[in-house]
Amino acid sequence: EKIIIMLRKIVLTSVLASSTLAVMTANAALPSGLYVSGQVGYADTNLKSRLSPLKSSLANDGLAGRLAIGYKLIPNLALELGYLQLSSASYNSVKNNCTYSNKQHAVDVLAKGILPITSNVNIYGKLGAAYLTTQIQSKTTNADISTTTNLNSTVGIDKRQWAPEVAVGMGYDITPNVSVDTSLTHIQTIGNNRPGNIDFLAVGVAYTFG
Image (cartoon, rainbow, N blue to C red; front, side):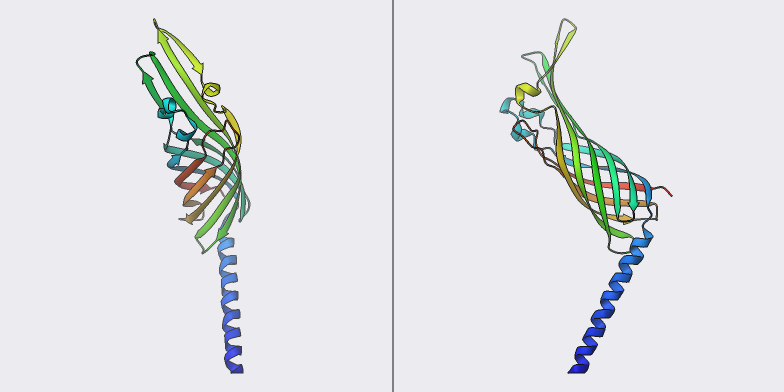
């Protein structure tokens, strides 16, 4: 029985040592330095619930894209600056001879933690803040004269707002410099006049210099 217990301890120690070595090897394979990335996917802006039934047509769920530049301080930690472009929405009111529109985008600053799983697969998490811009307008044309009016205060939606942002994802290194990933990003808007929370499901590609 003692021999069996000793064998179990040896096997357990060997497994832990192998796992630690695998993580260290995977970690060493990830280069540090400057990188750029691009993502495309679907964004649910949850804005319809924040608008009156009259303006619900301005909900802008749909295709979205994000570009980012980052720097890996160490193989497991990076800082990232990004730009998220959300879909635009609009509709025409023949009765008022008016076009209503909604445009949204965000600039974000994030810290990215990276955990290698194998030599070319990793999972990551991001935490930071987004500066979200929601621009709701009406454009009226009479006798070839156009008048644009900001409607943010009318519909009770802040034009600009800082909001917490989190993301989780998984990456795959095609080469030491080129990787692809899939991720889910959530921007949590706050306040009485907040726009909707944003959920962005995306796939992307990144290039690390050096």
